[in-house]
Amino acid sequence: MTRAAAPTPPKFPRGGVRAPSPDQIEPDQMEEATLRGALFEEGDWPALAALHSVTFAGCVFRRVNLTGSAWERVRLLDVRFEDCDLSGARWTDVSLDRVEVTGSRLLGLQAAGVRLRHVRLTRVHAPLSVWQRADALHLHLNSCDLSEASFMEAKLPGVVVRDCRLHRTDLRGAQLDGADLRGSALGGLRAGAADLQGVTVEAAQVLDLAYLLGVQVEELPGDA
Image (cartoon, rainbow, N blue to C red; front, side, top):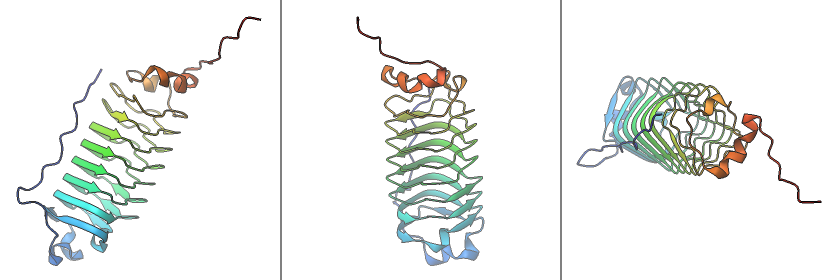
């Protein structure tokens, strides 16, 4: 059974982060660019709407509107998203290393095949998000809404899902050895009995999973 350690937090430049200069985010300069120590703060950033082969290293996104953005072959290394909106964003061949996402909206995010290393999501609203075939190590999800999200065929060994809502979340075919779902709402979870091998839950959660095992739960009738 795999028991992954807590994610390593992002590392930022000693001098802090600062807003990028206008020439750094010109559309013709963004292709295959690397931005280091950049602070993207407040509202819309048109330069971030469609990115290809860009690396963000030691960067912070704070209250940024990224709804409907399309990122392809983007690498996020030592990055933090704070109170951002990525609803409807499309991530293709994106990798996250030492990334934290807090207080943000990921409603309907399309992130199939995403690579996740040392990632923590806290108070994230992500119903209907798609993480199919994600490849994750050292992933922690805390107080998130993952209702009707899809993690089909994702590699999630040792994932910690604490105090999250997993209503109709799809884990079919996911690799969950060593996963810890304690404290989360599992009603309507979509998974097979084999998918849950090696998963840790609390006794109170077993009733929510009984239907997946073909078990019928009924109270013993009182004496006649």
